[in-house]
Image (cartoon, rainbow, N blue to C red; front, side, top):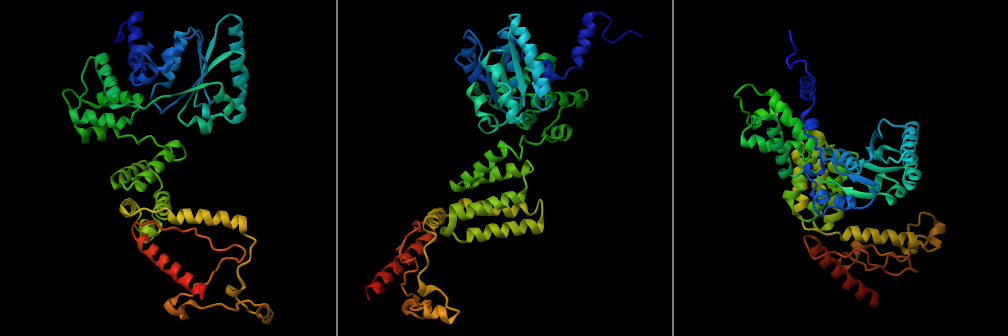
Length: 440
């Protein structure tokens, strides 16, 4: 029985092409076919301008998975007639790097330049990163390192000083729709999805071009003749992938920063959005509880003293109920913080007091406020002259409790918002009493 595709070389190529994943078959063959990175590849884009130069410099491509870093590097090599060499920092050691560099030197001796693409370059340690410096400086290689992590934190300063960092952006909905249309044109068939399901698939891709093509391929594989999937059926079939989120890396810090700023900015809707994004991505709820407790002290403080109580109660509620029931308590605390009056007066006072403690920490407190458990200490004047405030008129003695050589300091300055407005009134009242009593 003959092969379904026939026996000719053309038929065999068609068979092999049909076995390749859709994302690989639709990989752009020219820079003009790349979608989603117009700020780099548009008419006035940074990469377009670099290609007009006599030579291509080393670069670091920083961006999320599926944004086109590998594809663009390969196409740049073709444009500049470089030999394209690709390695991954995950699987490459120092010995492998030495072989790659030696082969590049041989090519350079024969007049052929090498573009070395290093995927996950941030996985190399500092010493391994330093090994690139000599071959970058003498022109043996043009380095393009790809990373999903912030280069400022993950790459050596010496490497960064010799390479230009170019930021790749996640695909927006328009560029993902363009990829979807290209897939339908290439395959010659429409996706078996309702309009709502098409939009849902775009959201599942989370800005990842490779992911949207993989999801499209899964939808085609699952559909029977004449079948069209709605949103629920699509989610069941493709088993919606988790959002891109590395709890130990930059995505983690970006989202917790966004949550903190939304709370500080009194935006409960945005705060809930970032809180639920982190929960949905698998963040440890107790980490979120700890951050909420921190916000209660740092950004609200005495403007709403109950904020800290609510956050501690939310943490306890989560530990008692677990997921998912306990997550609602964290959401309640998040909304409480976002809608509370804001004050960093305690935070500022604490920092100022800490600085003063470090500078003046050797000064002794006044003896009048020190206990005198022994006769010798009483003879030395410990506790002499101490006034017990509850026994004084107005329950206030007006004594100065700072070290005598230091004089009074003011660290805490309440704002005129929330409960701190009342605290400010108390402090003003006590300040007047103190002045009056010290006159007498």
